[in-house]
Image (cartoon, rainbow, N blue to C red):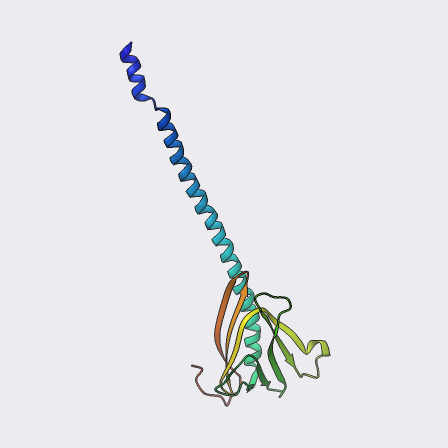
Length: 178
């Protein structure tokens, strides 16, 4: 009978072994949960960044389309950089692209507005907000027909920067963009 009892002890686990196994299992589960939580956080942050990028691209496609319809960069003068731009279109109408401080924002952010002197538009349509949450915006003119735009947007702590050059439809303009 003593042999039988000794065999059972060899096969059974002691309380210490069970506690150690439970602690190891708890640590593995804790690490796995931490990895899953971090993955969800990263996914949410990526989703925010992607939605900001998508909204920015839609607005920028519109702005760049408007700029391409222009015929001449009036401000900034060739070789200079400004926080605003003035472009003359094919009907000799002016379009101003100006940034204004965004109301109640910390850190200080701006809004990009477009003003036009088109008399055919109702007074309320002569100005329009194009973008919000602009951290930095600079227009550089390399010539009368090319305007470079450097823009940084910020939302929920994420920044999205774009640097692009636009060739205006000025047919006399034949210089290279870069």
